[in-house]
Amino acid sequence: MIGIPAGLLAANFVEWAFHKHVLHALGKKKRSLWAFHWHEHHRACNRYDHVDPAYERSVIGWHGQGKEAVALGVGVMLGVPFFPVAPFFVGAMWYSAYNYYRKHKRAHLDTEWARRHLPWHYDHHMGPNPDANWCVTRPWFDEILGTREPYVGTERERADRQRRQERAEARA
Image (cartoon, rainbow, N blue to C red; front, side, top):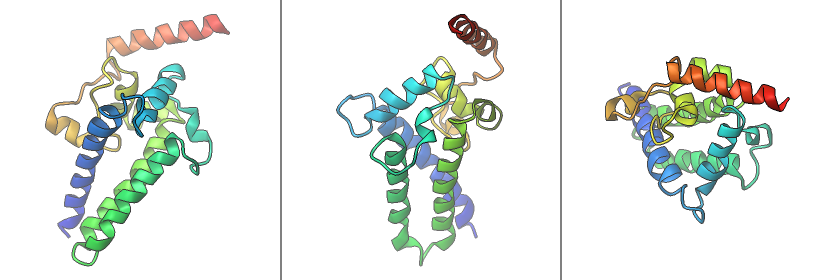
């Protein structure tokens, strides 16, 4: 049974490391397979107040959401050989992959839900430092590794939200 908390912890570390070292470090390079994350996903979040309209379309396709699902599927498949010896650990990793996709998609379709339930992820996209707050489902490894930078509920966030609202009203 120790495999369940160990799997959840390992999955959170993979989420943190993959986001930091693959989606951002490689994703900032325009020719990278992972460029969609920085050049499409982050741009959409900035333009549409954390919403990414790409999540409104089908997951099937070679676009950001499809690549995210393929990466999660590859991660799930990597666990298959280990299932007979560590079923609880692998099961927790599989659950984490599903949970990641579910929460990440919802966060980018419902800004207020994201602010309430995943403030650390909202902070990643809407805060002043997109190179912090790498975790999506739980902030564990951001806290452990010192990369958590709160933004939701700060004076800076209040001022930024007011400015965005004023711009939106001026365009309307």
